[in-house]
Image 1: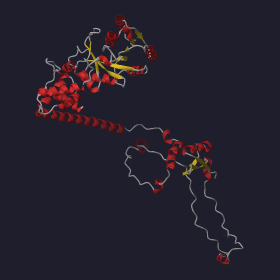
Image 2: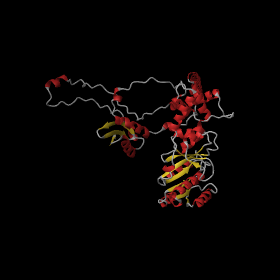
Image 3: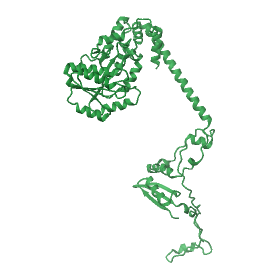
Image 4: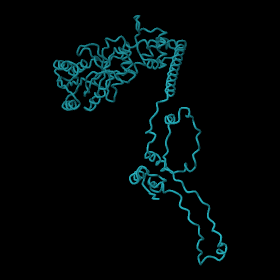
Length: 476
């Protein structure tokens, strides 16, 4: 019997050497961890038949040595055969079968659906518990070397009962989620009724905040400063003070115009990036002169976009540089190092467009470029939150509120800026350059955000509808 021994630092290397010499059909007799690695004993496949019991020899009396003891020779009679030790059965060597992990899907395919039942766990033998870790690491390797007979077998069709169980579980989870949401809304409605009874001033102001357009989350946060004993006027004053503390508004453009730098105006389509770029450039020209500022446009998609900025540049006496890609933008910014301020007019795109990430990467790779996000004050709060989420980043300096003259209430825009922690740099209320660009007036923004709708419109909330909206927001 030609038993081969293979030794290697790991079981995988030992099996690789075994396959290279004896082939994939070799029989693994044993594997064990030894000092310095793993030892595997194997036998070629064609020598399996040689592993049989040795032939029984004819028992003959052992020759008596001349030096043996006299008593020993007497005790062994000449006519009696010497006693033989008890015969042991010949060792039966079976082909090595690596352990196989039987998943539930495998058991269902091989044994049937009814045979799947939880089996009581058996305690592991002490010998297995004391086995070295190297042997445990070697077992998955030997499982990989074994022929995959199960994979070659045709897979039967999936049991329809499993699909029915999965569908039933999905329906059950959907029903539980609906019940949970209903309970949360009901509890929120109870809390709203309790608030109206115990703190009527807080409930009234909370309804006004929801009617103005603030999110339910921010409205609940703002009314936390209202005491139960406050009247409606005292509650409004407390909420106004809390809103003024949370709102970050630039009181002077010295941080932007006087400090200078490279700023890129970004945002969705139609928010007014090109016009706002010209307005800020006009302010800088008045303060520092036309030779201290330069304009860059990356908008090569919209018809007439570059020509529009060139017209503004000719009026202001400011050079305009069109760029097409990141390398050209980087080179242009490097050539304009001597300018006090460089403004970049970017391409407008949807906040869910993958080009937003590419635009951010292009601007961040061009050098020390800070972004100003333009927010349309006429958009809903949920849309503004989605826009801020798409353009957020460490290089986002702040925001500019545009079209404030077209918005009925500034609560969604102001609430989105507060929730995201963005500083409001400017507000715009028209197309005139540069007259319709203003520093954010905190009192004006709070007044436009907190004033309730006086007109009787379909969007005005009454007390019961405010309770439903508060309950729905609390349940969400």
